[in-house]
Every structure is written in structure tokens, then in C-alpha cells.
Amino acid sequence: FRFSTGTTDSTTTETTTTTITTTTTTTTTTTTTTTTSTTTTSTTVTTTSMTTTTTSASIWSLSIPTNATWSQTGITVAGNSNGSSGSDLRSLFTPVDIFIDNNYTLYIADRDNNRVVKYYANTTVGVLVGGNGTSGRTSRLLSGVKGIAVDQYGNAIVADSDNYRIQSFPPSSTVATTLASNSSTLLIGQMRDLHINVNNIIVITDSTYSRVVKFNSSSGVGTIIAGINGAGSRADQFSSPFGNFIDENETLYVADNGNDRIQMWLSGASSGITVAGVNKYMYIADSGNNRIVKWTTNYSAGGICVVGCTGTGGTAANQLQAPRDLKFDASGNLYVSDQGNHRVQKFAIQT
Image (cartoon, rainbow, N blue to C red; front, side, top):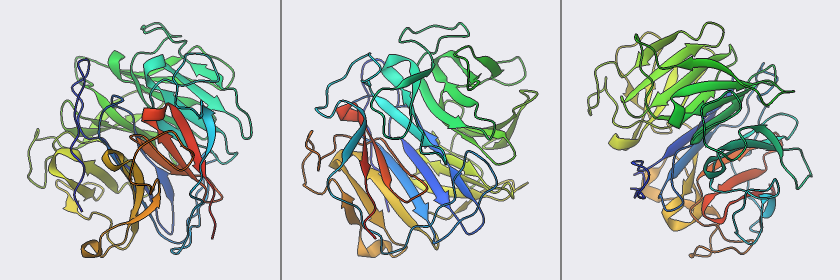
């Protein structure tokens, strides 16, 4: 398996974006990546096994049969079905990251609107979580939001990447508390992903410094847990990492974007092991080919197209345009951040 190679626009220096969502027999962990332009080619990897259980109120249990299929016709659950962008609460402008809680509430990092919005199930108008469309650094504003997750208390944890800080928005307020930011002891670069584990430990991938950092959500103290030796291709290094997750055993998985690999770091390890979907299935947002693909562990057999299988990008219900991220809800329905069409599409599970 090889990740896609991305391009950049005039305002960003981001390249390929990779996100991993992995389920095992003991935990469901969701990691998303949030940095891309509307022309960026990106790859999102989702690996699943048969069943999972979790303890976090915001992380659903998941069971997806290995032979599952999904409807080829998507339903627009957020944004405009015709692919147009906008700033009103029915519209999106470059949605890059999504999160779905166990109540089927969809959270969206609406990057170019500098905000996070949420859509309750079966609604068509978003609710503002944080940010208001204006780039800024006050407690109400965001800039270049590139990651969203929700903790077990319902707080929306946001990677406010262009402000180099992590913000927490409580369920009943659009005024955030800063959980972590640049300090004299630990600099935060461009965050490409943000994940919260069941112990409310926040884990970010820092593409600028090619490392993964975890933050205590109470104290805001950060600790480098992988990639302490700078950028590179050795087993103890990353090159522009993007997606990550950490399970309840504190085993860390990282989409090492620049090295085209997925690395597993055991708790306390000084280097990683390339695993790339061992004993799991991978679901890939193949942005350059405008489709979602499933790969088995037999990589030589190639991938199977899941949705967006027309061969061309577009705005039709069976088409995608530069898909950026994908997630499953608690029923196994597939949600795709259809970035180039400024919408989120839902594809119903069939089996």
C-alpha cells in the first residue's frame, strides 16, 4: 500500500493528509486529520476488525462485518448537495475533519469558515460549536481549525492549528478554554490530527516538528511520546506525520505521511514498528481518485472500491470530489467529508 502524494495551494504548505480510525476487539479509537486545501490530494485510512467495546461516552461501540457493503448513493447530511460553499449554518466551506458521537451527532471542522459546527441526527441546519467565520485568537474565535474530537463530558476539543493551541468548548457555550498552547518548554507546530483516548489524554500529531505529543487535559502539560529525534525515516523518526490514535494500553499508532507507512509504538518504546493494517481491514479515502477504497491485508490483491466508484469526481449523489476524511457511526453507516464539494455524505450500510 502506498499513500497518495498531495499538492499545495498558495496559502498552505500542507501535502498528503492521512487519517487513521482503528477498531480492535477491546477499544474503538477515532483519529482525524484536519489540514488540507480544497485541491489537496489526501488519504484517510480506516482499519476495522469485527467487534469493539469502549467505555467513553463519546466513543461508540462498532461492529462491521468483513463482507459489509454500502449504498452507492450518498445522502447529504451537512452542507449543500450541489457542491456549493457558504458561510450560513446550512453550508460548509472546506470541511476537513469529522467526528460522530454515540448519539449520531456529527461534528465538523469547517476549516475555511474558521469554525466547528455540529449537526444533530436528521437535521439540516448546523449548530455553532466554536468560531464564527472570522479568523482570530480570542476565546470565541478559531483560525485554520484542523481537528475535532469530543470527550466523555461532551466538551468539543479543537486543534486550533493556525493559533498553535488546543481549545475546549463546553457543551453549552461558544467561549473556549485554552487547554494547551506554545510555551517556552514545548513548542506546538502545525497540528494535523487530534485524538482523545478513553482516559481524556489528548494526543496530537505535530507535522512541523515531526513528532507526536500528548497533553494532560487538566494541566495542559505536554510530553513528547514519539519522534523525539527530529524528522527522518528511521524507526525512531517520522516525516510530517498526520493521523494518530492511542488505545487504553497507550499503544500509539501513527500515519507517518512522509515515509508512506503506519507505525506502531508500544508504551514506553523508543522506536516504532511498521504495521500498516496488520490483521485488519483498511478503508481509504483516495482523494486523488475521488473514491473510498477497502484494502485487505493482502495488499498484492489491490483495493476494492466502496463508494464513489464512477471513476470521475463530481457533485452527483454517487460521486465525491477530493474526499478528505471518513468515519463510521455506531450502526456502521459510512460518513465522508466530501471536501471538494463542501459537504458531508452518508452512505448507508447494506449488510
